[in-house]
Length: 182
Image 1 (cartoon, rainbow, N blue to C red):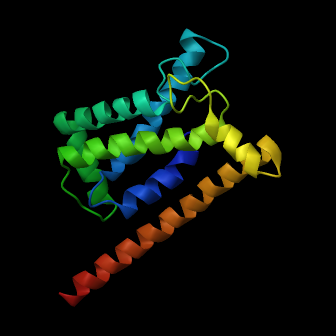
Image 2: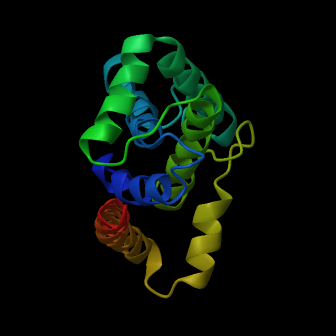
């Protein structure tokens, strides 16, 4: 994906949907961590391929980076406090656990890599296998070609932004109704 904000829609929606088991801020923030590889590539190894410097855009290394990220956020108390406080500020307070943060890091990284595997040729989803089977699979079932696939992915990510906002409003509404009933 050309910009991490496209990932925030699907990640935010999934994070809110599974917020009882996943830490939403970690689930969303790990997307930024994964895309740091692209920024670093521009500095350390300018040129193509941009998603293979540290192999963060793979299920194996990206998942490991997500797990480590979730654990670091949990064990660094100010970061854990920031995650808990941010959820409280948006009206959905939670108590962070190590498991919820590690799972959020793992699954958030995997979701990012999965989306990018349809969007970028150079993503090696199953590294060390060097091919991207998702591009081949998507092209096989698409009549609009590679450019069309990329536009469809952007559209789906934007739709998930809307779904995320809708889900958030629904959750807040349910919480307010529950508070009034008490």
